[in-house]
Amino acid sequence: MILIIAALALWAIMWTVNVRLANGESAGTSTVRLLVPLLFGLTLLAMWELVVRGLELPIVILPAPSVIAERVAGSGPTLWVDFKQTFLKGALGGYAIGCTAAFLTAILVDRWDFLRRGLLPVGSFVAALPIVGTAPILVMWYGFDWHSKAAVVVLMVFFPMLVNIVAGLQDTTQMQRDLMKTYAASYWQGLFKLRLPAAMPFIFNGLKISSTLAMIGAIVAEFFGSPIVGMGFRISTSVGQLALDMVWAEIVVAALAGSAFYGVVALIERRLTFWHPSQRR
Amino acid sequence: MRTILPVAVVVAAIVAFWYLAAIPMNIHFAVTSAQRAGAEVTPESGAERRNMGAIALAARNPAQWTDSWTQAKPRLPVPHQVVAELWRTTALQHPASKQSLVYHGWVTLSATVVGFAIGTGLGILLAIGIVHSRAMDMSVMPWAIASQTIPILAIAPMIIVVLNSIGVQGLIPKAIISAYLSFFPVVVGMVKGLRSPDAMQFDLLKTYNASRSETFWKLRLPASAPYLFASLKVGIAASLVGAIVGELPTGASRGLGARLLTGSYYGQTVQIWSALFATAILAAALVAIVAGIERATLKRMGLAT
Image (cartoon, chains in turn purple, blue):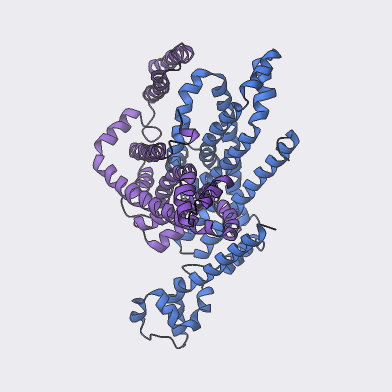
């Protein structure tokens, strides 16, 4: 009971501090901008710990953060093997293949207006469908190992990428294209010097959406069958054994990997599209 | 007319490619069963055929091509088989029968809609809080954005099993996953929408001496409608994926996700493909309904023509 009251008191204190910080005079500085969400996150974690201990919740319902942290620290090798199987092989492999394939298709589609007008509606229709559902079929075709996971990821990222790149390649004005023509630029010169750079913000938008989709695809595909490693495999078997601390440990790894993946793509975007209004600071 | 013809050509090309691809995918079994039935096939020995590539085998046995389109458990069923299965499991079955895709679709759809309603409601409430409280904005918003980069679906099995262990079953666990998936797109879109009026408009309301709630109802909320609908379309598709994935881990026997799973257990490829098409049709219908409401609403508000 004391722990619950402590949790509520902590919440009240944190909230007052945050309100003070957010409405104070130094609210605009980057330190406060970083400090406020950090404080919020840490308070939530602490409250989680206190409430779980206070109510003495069993581990099969909700493990405390300290137990999860212990598990992450204690089973490093297992987590690393799973990470390698699911993220490095399944998600990244599929992501690379899918994005490259979408890129080449987009260049091809862009050359013929007829093809573009036909493929774009079909592509955006397919991009809205639950493509994860193809996982059982692809597992049947390509076996249990990471190849089938990569195939699911390829299908998941292909259409959002295609739609984004094709839209991006259209994002030049008539004036700019005319200018290239007065320079007597060939098709390829126009593509590489004008239209691809202009498409970069769209391409990166697609790459960022796809980075999340790739993680989801690789993990969910493992629910349909996998060798005895992999994050999705570990999650589904640990859930079966009611070892929820292991499940949470995998989720922590998945969350870190997902954010890092997204962060890296966003960082490259900032370096390459520094000229775009959305990147100006 | 400008788009109908190209789309029709592309769809026809996909269907044609599908039929072509089904030949090498299914040719090994087709040739073997044709030989059992007494037909002439090349090469004669089964061992030799196993070592051959599918395309080479297909090229040498053109007579068996049509057989590869009529198998009961093909590796790749062709469109007419899938359509026939869809027709058989929807129109020819009683809607309440466990054989009926309408029944399974309804199970999934109800979880999707309940979850979508919860997720959207909470998302809008949180967005209103974020817009009106600076502290909430600074504390919660970074996490809401960061959480979109996390593969949330990974926790679906856990939610199902944990809720199961405390006695909650059926629709609610799936709806929670759906709600979770549709929640964040709505928050992010709605915050953007509620902030979309420009400073001039806010200044105008200030000169009218409008209170905070008046500003909200008369300016912020109407201005957010286009953003809200854009995120609703993302949210409803995500909700459907959530409900389907929520049916996977516990070996549920009802719902479209369960059809996918049982199909993959028993090698019923036609069943998997028909369930897949049913989810696609359902997703398209849900997005189309939201888009229809969007068009009607925005038109009435004078925001669209």
